[in-house]
Length: 276
Image (cartoon, rainbow, N blue to C red; front, side, top):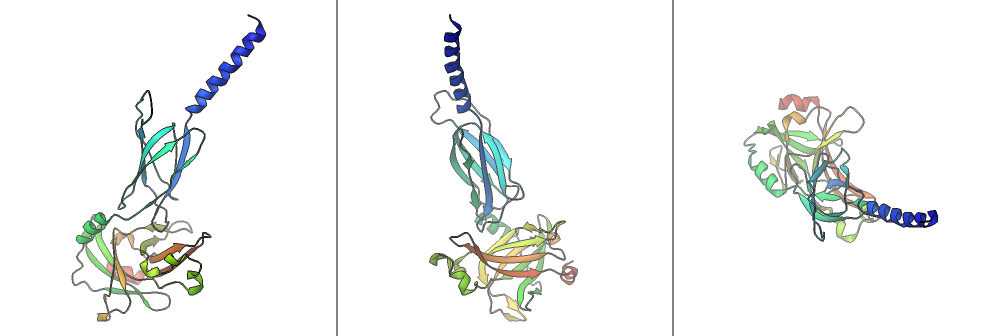
């Protein structure tokens, strides 16, 4: 056979082989996991289970998993096909959906998790603060921002119940940037987080072990408070001097700007001394 004819036979065969390899090459799947207000959830467990739907020759593939980093992000490479993706994080309701991975196309799979009501109800029922005397924590403007009281031991030792004052609504000019259905901040959930001082400029965020979103009016100086509060529970060992407990409501404007309102409760050495 002439050399030129051999070359023509070889070229289409090589192209077909390369195309076949490309069709089954691994594809990147990435995403970000956050709570309802957009705060990153680190160490969330992301599980991928292969679904052979549509395959003429079904080949078993083991489940694979990856955990999110401190920014709530994950990345993994998968062979093309359908996958059930389940994202799990401590105290949050799992998020499970099906995705299709195709060759040559990066798949973006983000998830916003909600605090699981069963966990909140179960953990909250274990804390009875009884007749404990609350300690007032004031904001920088001198108003009562939080009321803290020690409680019985939980899974991580003694607990601290913290009444966090409902954040006030943002200024009118800020609210005007939001869609009409997001301007009533009283209808938005209140996220409570503990900011712990870290080794760098960015504090570590810790969610409460339990959070009751029911607005209550606890006693302040012997009388029911005018302001409404929500109750969060933290392991006492987490709450150290220099940390801050934050209650926040937030919404995102169409342009991507975040409109928020916060109640901030700074923790001092004097606070910690009373709790210990």
